[in-house]
Length: 453
Image (cartoon, rainbow, N blue to C red; front, side, top):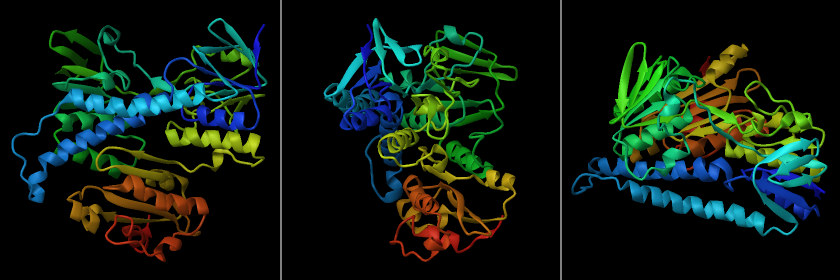
């Protein structure tokens, strides 16, 4: 006999745990299935641990620059990788345990440990248990995508998960990939003391970002001694006593460690989605409508639906589902404005359309740009790399998007994003008075000097 519930939730990432609390508060009896790590990618091997390491790497970097600020540091700056790891582990454990205990102690919620797969449209199997409910919510997450390269499977390569378990510093880290995961780890390990080589298949880093953004980050990396090789299509990976060698038709590189950061794939392989009438696209993402329904009575939330690969988009998926089901409020995923940060240093804050996307749209538009060398706050902090770029619709005055690369821009970008959600013209900001000295105070200045795109 199956165990019957009002709802089944699968995957303890950033959407389902919050939804679980809302469902139980509404009087529902729920089952919650998690196969391994409560908290999902963000807590265990994504945002939380990597940004803890970004902080350690920044401390090392600033220590080496101390003389620029009139501070003497006696002796060379050294990395205790074991301590770097233990600090990260302590932070992760607190977040992980909070999510797990919050669910296990939640009255009205029964936790099942194991992998969940469909037996039918409203039945799922977890181990030897059969669960049944009229509503099912899938928060399955994603994992590293491993390319098909000869010899790679026989090599002890690293992913975003296993690299976080290192307690010794690589002598020479080779990274396959040129996007977010690759770039953040590249700068982390270079600043901690490793030699780093990035092998990017495309013609430049960050092929989805504007060329000026990618070029600026490449210049920052070059200044820090990170080697970037583009147009590299590896044909073979060899394991040897020194570590690893990556080979391509035009060359080869030796290193002590290899990180594979070539993309992500959803955790839908063992879902048996067809038994529930769920459609997967060619990449394996669950197809959903505007309110995140994958099939009658089934919702897909978080990374597995292909509508965002970030903690904030996953949490917003929870908000959309809860609003429509519990609050009788009409919210849709298509209402969401693209926004994200890249946590290299200085960080990239992004919202809305890129310049390339605006040009491709054919919209008459305006652009404002200001280098960080002309931002007083950046000069005071000795962090003047990057620039501020904002795009505006020429006819309506609405902000179309922004790329902000500079100190504090992971926070500054939200003053633009909030105006975009309010659907107010850019003049709302030009008339605002921001505190001095800040990076944010230069946003109105940028918007007062708009030029035709």
